[in-house]
Length: 114
Length: 116
Image: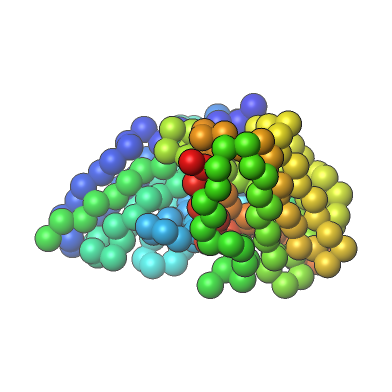
């Protein structure tokens, strides 16, 4: 069965600093990969997705992620963090068969300090 | 706004009781998913419906059941509630009619269930 690991439970960065959130997945084939963000009291909002093609994908709010098949990773990056980026970030993997449930990592909580 | 509507936003009830959570998917989406989010377990997939039919089952307890109606809204029924059922319950939808790829899930804002 597929699984997703987000090794960092909590990360603190300074406003304006760069950010990288790690995600590793376990799956036999090339999965569909997603990053979602959850602000307190809110649902999950899709940041970006990878289905195929260019391994560097751009998302909303200035985020990007890079799919590295050799490392089974899909790390999320942002060059300059804003205080409003403080939230919980979830990496998720879906089967390559269409309209199937996503398996989520445990999440990484991002704190931003001045 | 994801377009997915969940009601109620909050629910407080006692152990042993039964509750119903409701979800209206995004307009045109055929698939509905239910997830449970708790601090210790993270986001756990419960069940998926596609155009009224059960499509996939996850870690859903026998005390829980769901259905998707002809108008595509869905309800999650939780019975014989226990303290450990306290969690955020999310509904998500995907699969716009006519789509042929794994469309992303769009989540509602959840129902926070507190069992006392």
